[in-house]
Length: 340
Ligand SMILES: [Zn+2]
Figure 1 (cartoon, rainbow, N blue to C red):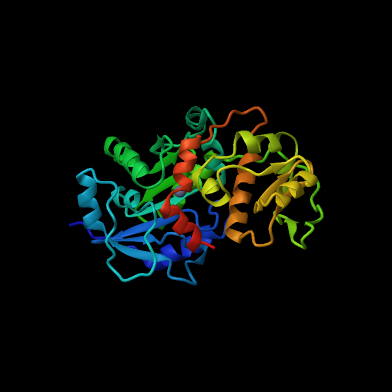
Figure 2: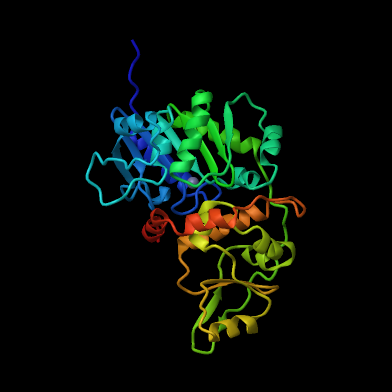
């Protein structure tokens, strides 16, 4: 007789709060977790923060059996049915969580693995790094939601013992039977894909705010080291390697707004443009005062990923079509609205 193992909600909540507080693992509303409890799939609600798991109810309950039935029929665009009343929507990745065979599924955009996953030859590089006896699969970039769920289903059907999925230009998915197992796999993965920043010295750490004539101002973004993005090869990378993964473009827009001087920024504002985040060459990174914490965390993530790239490494960015699919997506507009 096999004993049915139930997952303690408390263990999940504690773990969410723990990893959610670490910006190297989770950034704002990014990432999600689920657990399967008989006919219910408990999944993080879209736009909520893992970090808030203790203070708020961040989970929604959906009908697992219904999702599994639809997935068996090849339907990856099914709308999850709520099993408990909620004002929140289940995560965009609910179908992916439902089709994974594991009791608990964690999906995050951890900086170090992500720094490999945006490289043009990421698969080969990761193969060289993963030495432990752990079953993992690589999934090529897919739009989150339906397309990603379908690609993951194909991998899982060929390799049902997979514990770790590495999503190109996106992040990682880990499946386990309890939190201890999830924690073990994540720790193993992080130690194999450890990646130190290549950039040590900080440049122009405290640039002055910029006052625009009508009394409005742009303030330096308060993230340690962030102004490095306005200098040398990092400033060039903004233009060539902006759309590296979905959350970055969803929160920070389809392209960077860069200026070679303050006067060019002012000129642009006088023309009626009003960018929220600007990169001023050899000065710093500035935003309007209302630039949200959720966006700051995304910018910090991007910075941490870029400083982990050797200067000559070739990165793989999302193309224009992939970026516009993310920007125009109602589900993402909703998530951004909720996550403020
Ligand atoms: Zn994701």
